[in-house]
Every structure is written in structure tokens, then in C-alpha cells.
Length: 376
Ligand SMILES: *[C@@H]1O[C@H](CO)[C@@H](O)[C@H](O)[C@H]1NC(C)=O
Ligand SMILES: *[C@@H]1O[C@H](CO)[C@@H](O)[C@H](O)[C@H]1NC(C)=O
Ligand SMILES: *[C@@H]1O[C@H](CO)[C@@H](O)[C@H](O)[C@H]1NC(C)=O
Ligand SMILES: *[C@@H]1O[C@H](CO)[C@@H](O)[C@H](O)[C@H]1NC(C)=O
Ligand SMILES: *[C@@H]1O[C@H](CO)[C@@H](O)[C@H](O)[C@H]1NC(C)=O
Ligand SMILES: *[C@@H]1O[C@H](CO)[C@@H](O)[C@H](O)[C@H]1NC(C)=O
Ligand SMILES: *[C@@H]1O[C@H](CO)[C@@H](O)[C@H](O)[C@H]1NC(C)=O
Ligand SMILES: *[C@@H]1O[C@H](CO)[C@@H](O)[C@H](O)[C@H]1NC(C)=O
Ligand SMILES: *[C@@H]1O[C@H](CO)[C@@H](O)[C@H](O)[C@H]1NC(C)=O
Ligand SMILES: *[C@@H]1O[C@H](CO)[C@@H](O)[C@H](O)[C@H]1NC(C)=O
Ligand SMILES: *[C@@H]1O[C@H](CO)[C@@H](O)[C@H](O)[C@H]1NC(C)=O
Ligand SMILES: *[C@@H]1O[C@H](CO)[C@@H](O)[C@H](O)[C@H]1NC(C)=O
Image 1 (tube, rainbow, N blue to C red):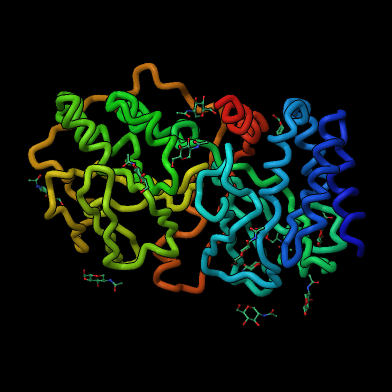
Image 2 (tube, rainbow, N blue to C red; image 1 turned 45 degrees about the horizontal axis):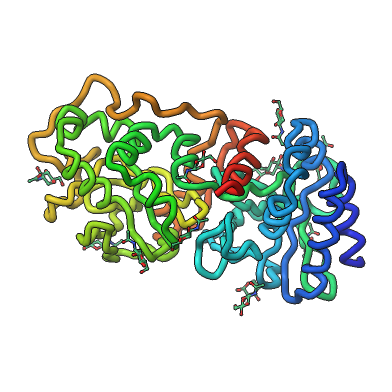
């Protein structure tokens, strides 16, 4: 099959306006010069769903934005098979307003180990899951497919658009991590953290903040800033595939956190990773179940405990999650069920469990982040 024809069929079927047409022409010129790539082409149904939600009109008003969305669907390298271990594949979405990750933004891919119904899932921004549709299939039942080869590489049809990863704050809002968003704001770190290159963020969930809420909410501004800085690693994008047992990472306040793998779980000091690998514009977020304490170098996971002690000795809980006042609410429903447990990946178990998709990512979320980032 001729590559250009397929790209056109897929992308132009949605052509709505002048700027989209121009963007497509530019995109195709860009593609024409590329070899050794894998193109993830959204299915017609994926286009129809997006068009139905008006968002493409918004998107097409901005050529740079649509180019970045398309670039994100181009993987660097010809991938003919995928592993049951999570892989983070570099895309053609390079450094720029939508990507502050050295070498280019990535997409996570995981194959299922089920040989009778093999599936391949890509996870992009906001944990959006896009599955490969086997050639010849007219419905949305997904499968491993085998791709269609062309001169420059291979093409797979996927059932949903990838979502371009958004900034840390908006991603945390959409994942309902409201305490963390409020605490980053209160510590005056919001803007600076979103402006870093190559970041790993360990973000405690609301319950984690609430468990130490009465103590942490009365910390001085300087102490709160030190605590929040201890959750951010500058200069390293630590996808789960790189967080091996015993890894230490230096945080923004200069103190290290330690990664430990115990009984199939991954811990950051004593906090457990509950949702790994949420891709953001400038790196990755791992959601954790405890607030990290830079003043507690001895905090470590107790393998015999079902839940860990907070890392703040004598801390008391608040009646509500702290720091949430004034924090905006999620506008979309994100499935935070871990795509694969970070730990089963680390432990190399063969059951890479297919996630359950609980909610569609609103099209506004799909393109909204990119829209805002254009204004920066
Ligand atoms: C569009 O909106 C409808 C209803 O709100 C939803 O069911 C559907 O999944 C959305 N499609 C996309 C691609 O977001
Ligand atoms: C693809 O990756 C190779 C290194 O593996 C790099 O040299 C090349 O610049 C990349 N190309 C693009 C378009 O990202
Ligand atoms: C699948 O990938 C593995 C590792 O990259 C490689 O050794 C193997 O040959 C590949 N199989 C096929 C059918 O491409
Ligand atoms: C990317 O990071 C650099 C700092 O490394 C910063 O100057 C720049 O503003 C960031 N870009 C975006 C779009 O956030
Ligand atoms: C594999 O997929 C088939 C078909 O969807 C299903 O019936 C079976 O239970 C799956 N097996 C495992 C081990 O998940
Ligand atoms: C969808 O396609 C698969 C094969 O790709 C087929 O097994 C299944 O029966 C189809 N389902 C419907 C409802 O057409
Ligand atoms: C294969 O698995 C996918 C994803 O879990 C599911 O949507 C599809 O119906 C399954 N196909 C068959 C034939 O069981
Ligand atoms: C993919 O290719 C393999 C062998 O190369 C074949 O056994 C399998 O049926 C193909 N799958 C599909 C969905 O075409
Ligand atoms: C983050 O790292 C970059 C590159 O090493 C450095 O230039 C920058 O000052 C660091 N930012 C902070 C806030 O530490
Ligand atoms: C990880 O390292 C710790 C020691 O720091 C050890 O107790 C634990 O067994 C190791 N985990 C694995 C899975 O090897
Ligand atoms: C350090 O963290 C551990 C939990 O790992 C906790 O039991 C202990 O009380 C903490 N110590 C201090 C001084 O906060
Ligand atoms: C993060 O993204 C949101 C939504 O796209 C935007 O409103 C906000 O200004 C951004 N924040 C920063 C610090 O870039």
C-alpha cells in the first residue's frame, strides 16, 4: 500500500478547514523525508468521534497544534512487534511548545500476553488508551494486528487518537490530585515546575495529603516548599522501565529519594506507587500513596505492613483533603487503573493485565492543553 494514500485517507477524511489542509500538506512533506518510522493512523471511527465533539474545529484553527498532534502519531523506528513489558517509544513530537522532553515526547506501549486474543495498547497523555485494530476489521474490536508496511516503515490503525501530554498541573487536575495541585500552588512551585525540562514528579493522592493534613497545612511556607520540592526530580525522566530497585534520584531540594521494589510493588521511600507512568509535556508523573518527608531519611517501606506509616512522625490527619480550596475540578474522567502495575513490569511477570477503560477522554481534554500551551 502506498503510504501517502493511506495518510490522506485517514487524515483528510476529516478535512474541515483551510488550516487543516495546509497542516496536512506540511505534515506530509515532513513525513515524506522520514524513513524507519511507525505511523499510528487513527481509524475513521476515531475521527468521527472527534469530529462529533467539535474539537477538531478548534484544533484546525491552529496549524502548529494539529502538526504536533500528528507528529505524536509518528514513532521513531519500525516496530513490528511489541513487548508485554511497558516500552516508552520516542515519537516525532520533538522539543517545542508541546514537548519539553529531551529527544522527543514518548508514548507507552504494552502488548497483552494473551495469545488467543493478543492486543497492543498505546498509552498517551491523561492515560488515554489506543488499541491497534487488526487489518480488515471493520468494528472496533482491537487486536495485535500486523501492520501495513511501506517504504518508510510500518502503519498500524488505532481505535482512538493519542492524547498529546499536557502540563503537570492540568494533568494532576484531570487525575483529581487536587491537594497536590493546591500544595504546589501554595508553595509557589506551579509555574517553575511546569517550565522545567525532563521532570519526574511523585504526586501524592488526596488521601495521602489528608493523612498528614493537620500537620502539613500548618507548616511554614518555607517548609511546605521544601516538602513539595522533595517530590520533583529535575533533569531525569524516570519512566517505570528505568526505576530499578535501589535507584536514587536527587530532588529539587537536593535530597535523594530511593526507589525500592518489594513483593511486586514499587516504593518511593515509604510511599507506594499506585498509578505509574502518566505522561506529561515535560516528563512523567507517578501517583503515590504517601506524602514524602525530606526530613525523614529513614522512611522506608515495611514489606510486612498492608499500608505504610506516614513519613511524618506524629502527624495528624485533617478532616478533609488540604489545599484544595480554589483548585479547579476535573473536566474529564481519567481511568487511573494502572495500565500495568509498575511492579509486575519490574518483576517481569507474564500477565500484563489489560486495563479497563472506564471513561472516554473528553475531546476538550484531548486538545485543550495544547491550545493553552500555544499561548505561552
Ligand atoms: C464525544 O462525546 C461523546 C459524548 O459526550 C462521548 O461518548 C465520546 O466518547 C466522545 N468522543 C471522543 C473521541 O472523545
Ligand atoms: C530517531 O532516533 C535516532 C536515534 O535512535 C536519532 O538519531 C534520530 O534523530 C531520530 N529521528 C527523529 C525524527 O526523531
Ligand atoms: C520481536 O522482537 C524481538 C525483540 O525485539 C525480536 O527478537 C524478534 O525477532 C521480533 N519478532 C518478530 C516476529 O519480529
Ligand atoms: C522548557 O524548559 C525550559 C527550561 O529547561 C524552559 O526555559 C522552557 O520555557 C520550557 N518550555 C515550555 C514550553 O515550557
Ligand atoms: C484471552 O482472551 C480470550 C478472548 O477474549 C478470553 O476468553 C480469555 O479468558 C483470555 N485469557 C486470559 C488468560 O486472559
Ligand atoms: C468484530 O471483529 C472481530 C474480528 O476482528 C470479530 O471476531 C467480531 O465478531 C466482530 N464483532 C462484531 C460485532 O461484528
Ligand atoms: C479482545 O480483547 C479486547 C480488549 O480487551 C476486547 O475488546 C475484544 O472484544 C476481545 N476480542 C475477543 C474476540 O474476545
Ligand atoms: C500476523 O502474522 C502472523 C505470522 O507472521 C500470523 O500468524 C498472524 O495470523 C497475523 N495476524 C494478523 C491479525 O494478521
Ligand atoms: C533544572 O536543571 C537544569 C539543567 O540542569 C538547570 O539549568 C536548572 O537550573 C534546574 N532548575 C532547578 C529549579 O533546579
Ligand atoms: C530491593 O532491594 C531491597 C534492599 O534494598 C531488598 O530487600 C529487596 O528484596 C529488593 N527487591 C527485589 C525485588 O530484588
Ligand atoms: C519516618 O518515616 C517512617 C515511615 O517510613 C515513620 O514511621 C517515622 O515515624 C518517620 N520519622 C520521622 C522522624 O518523621
Ligand atoms: C497548564 O495547562 C493549563 C491547561 O492547559 C493552563 O491553563 C495553565 O496555564 C498551564 N499552567 C502552566 C503553569 O503552564
